[in-house]
Image (cartoon, rainbow, N blue to C red):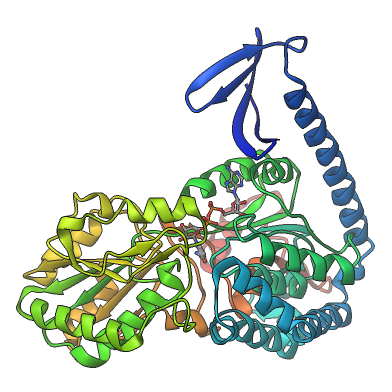
Length: 510
Ligand code: NAD
């Protein structure tokens, strides 16, 4: 029986352990080797870690109870309360912008410009939109009633789900933590937020700001990695909103299934960008390159690979290289960021096949810098095509016909995003009808993310559910259907005795 995955700290080393409970005692699994022990032979480090986890689970349990109590007091349902909390959150971020810049620079070497444009301003945009529209969103929505139910009214009431758990990723640590939180607050829930431990400075500042300024029975940030998230996932939340990889998405989904908790999964995938021979090459390459190398390619919606029509391939490659040079990507000038940690650095580097490097390929482990790298002569069987790259490497694959390009995309699981660069209207229509993906753009990349009138989410392996704008409010709400019947008349059709005459009328009314 599965019990825990632990992180044990001894001196400078941190080890991941899987602790399995069997009839023979506990089994510790590390790096493929397993070591058996029972409660007497168990090392003290494991005993104390198990104790720590038990204490933490106890704390989480109390926190959940306090949040549930507040929720059932109806405080968080008040629309004025929700608006006041959204305003408070916005002001908190405004007052602490400098600290937020400092923390994200420490984690990723992200410039102030990029932090503003990709994290803070999208957050202001979303929160202002929620504050402005919340009174409208919470109003019961009247819908038509069918004749069978005459005389009555039908409407849909958006009700808060209860206590939400938001688990976020490190690549846009503020954006991916705070924007879902807007949805949870706007919908009238209490929330627990678990930022990614892989961006420790931003996780710490998020925790400090929220935990100092909001009561824990309303909003609470819990920091930590796998053991803490595992403990949180055991709780009966009313909503789990997860941003991360499909692998961990499956773990989250399984945990949610235990309590039949409503889940939104914002995952990733291999996003294609197709270039057809008639595209406006200069403009399209410029847009694609800027999207691909933003955040050093550590973006869930970035183009993962390019499919380019054979006849324009050489011109395309020349243009891509020229554009990369023009953008002058370097950490020192703020045009680029570092890879988040050594583990990811090694993973991304391992995807570069030096024989296939058309441009770039240099790196520095010390600064966790990987140069924008273009790979050519790539086939769909290459290592780089077997997983989401999530780094500054761009494999370029050529194709002859658009059918061939679509067939290549269909070899992979459904991507989070897909992009088409083309001026051919027939191909544009076919792209929309024949290629399945979560969200995308024609003649641009990633900018769909900035339009809060578009739901943002994946499909299949790239996720389920969506958010942004009004969709965030809906994501954290339940749409309660109400039929409100008047009592001044009763048709008596449904009551016994069921006659042929009644049957005739019912058939007409349905
Ligand atoms: P990840 O799945 O490793 O981690 C995400 C979160 O899950 C973190 O908070 C982490 O602490 C937690 N976690 C990790 N392992 C866990 C486990 N075994 N049990 C429970 N919780 C666990 O993802 P990441 O490396 O932070 O982010 C990269 C991935 O996220 C990529 O696949 C990317 O495409 C995806 N992503 C998606 C979106 C989106 O909006 N769809 C946005 C950003 C990133």
